[in-house]
Length: 322
Image (cartoon, rainbow, N blue to C red; front, side, top):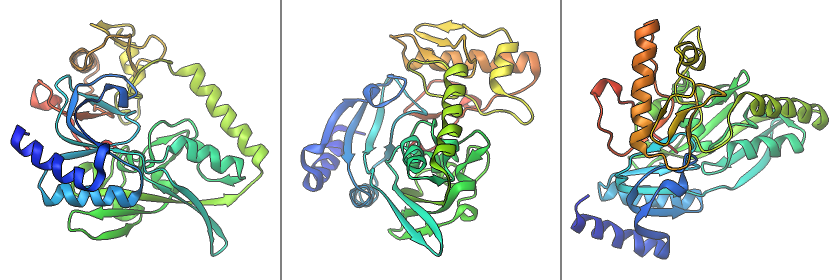
């Protein structure tokens, strides 16, 4: 944004949120990969009402903005983001009983994995698959996160959304148009903001649930790398796995600058310490081209991009990242 317009937006947000609005803030500390340049403006919200208020203000100003949760599935460009990043720390969770079932209400900035583990401790089944999934409820809804045979589409009762029109609406899984790692929210970025997700649960034996989750934790530790990464880089193509294709192409351990294809799981790219977004982006392009050359498969990004990336148009996959 041009400087004068940035000042206007900053002043308006400051009237509502005070010192929680800052200018020219590096985003790397707010991403799991620890990569990324500054946002023109960073605003921290701490409740669904504050998130809604921020979105309404920004829409009224026609200001570009993105909502960022845990930053676990996002690559922020080295130049940062020319707009407002809303850091979503709306994390309230509550449980209610309705018509013989238990519902978990989670604000969109709540950790999905922490929510799942909290359900297990209460003897509530239905989200065990999510116990090791990084990221927030909002981001999981946008990307239809999934693991271990479960996903958001199969667990969600409904989501509460703030539409750009200003209406708050309750959308079920069908209306959200879920597909493999996608939703209407991802396909139409900027049309709505996720305020809350509501999940169907049922009573079960806590000890049995803990055993299932312990198995998932062990599997994750044995098969996925530790260290700073964005999670799974590419979606699995139909009938195959992105990691298998990258491994079969001989690309495990491939390095560009400070970014490396994990030697443990090839669908994870690791920040070795000083990686730049341009290193990761170059690595993405090299991996895609080599996999397509050898196997005729075009890998599609699972992560989201925030900011500008210099690359051919057919290599760009943009969407929401909460």
